[in-house]
Image (cartoon, rainbow, N blue to C red; front, side, top):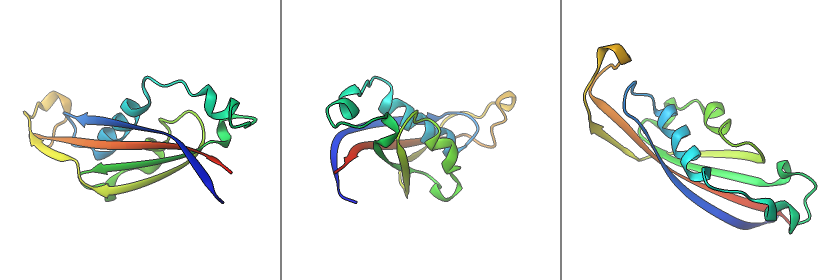
Length: 120
């Protein structure tokens, strides 16, 4: 299938406590789409429903092999969704707090790019 890219949004997400790459990745995707309304994607493109949009998510995050992909994609309300994970982001020293179930002092930072395309 051929497609045309219409929108690319970028975001960043952090898991300060819990050391969970999925949380950081989901927050990065949520940040990327937080201030968007895309009616033109389906109205101008002639789509019947926003679920016809093609939405590719790329996330660079520490320990990408441990990310629960369905949870990250669940952040997106519409579209035919794909997720590409790669090693990246950052691990920085924070401060462990026992009441928050921290395993150590690490904070995980993820970056995301969300690309919305239409099939042509």
